[in-house]
Length: 341
Image 1: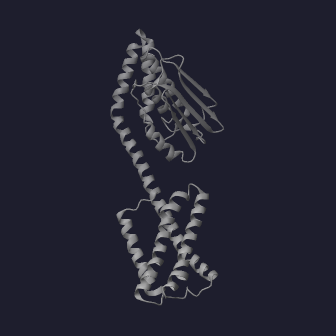
Image 2: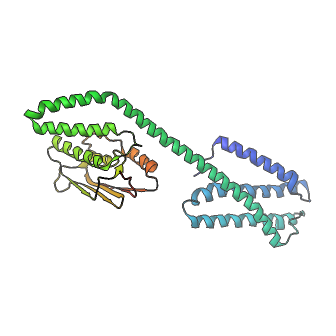
């Protein structure tokens, strides 16, 4: 829906004022009293203004891109409304009050033809205003997306400050535990790889191999199995995944959310993760039962950011369906075209 700000309203008032002055002094010549001329011009101008804003705020704004049939029907209805009011004003009201002008004596055919010509001016003006508004909205939307990308990049740079010390400490822990506790050392190594992937791929415009994203998910699941007594996850990967690229953390965030808000300790109700790559397209789904309390703090970039990245980098090439009930939560992501390595 088009929103009219104070500045836009002021510009519209100035433009309509100039149009009204032109109509009064240079276009419409009506015989009759001053009151009659004023009444005739009032209906004439109101018909113009109302038709213009119905087209701009209702017809183009609500139906032009969403429903072509409703657009055609509503556009036709405005034409009929405009011509009918114009006809009544010229052919009925004006003669009834004792006035006349050149339109009063025209044949019905010529009158309707001239009236449609005037309506075309209104229609093209409304269409121009609508497309101008749409272009401005697209520019604002792109600027907002770029702002979010820059914000994430700044956050990435802040995290880089601490990463060197973190990895040195993890390497120290790994070397100390390798002989006495090899399983714990293996978990530290998994966590180190997962953390390195997370920190080194925070710039969303840089694609990463799909294999690395899958490896991150596998490491994430392995870490959860180390810190929890019972973790039941069914992970299925189908198709060739070696030669494809994807945005970092695009899939992992759904897995993280399933652990954060889901039940994973019930062997009868495991978290089900399915990844299918076929014909350069990707299908990814995560299904889990819900828990009332949050169990794990998420380390991902968040579902809101994922939706922004999808709209920015996979515009018109993706489908995201999220379904939630009282007891279950599922998400399905389809990327119609994924980049080839």
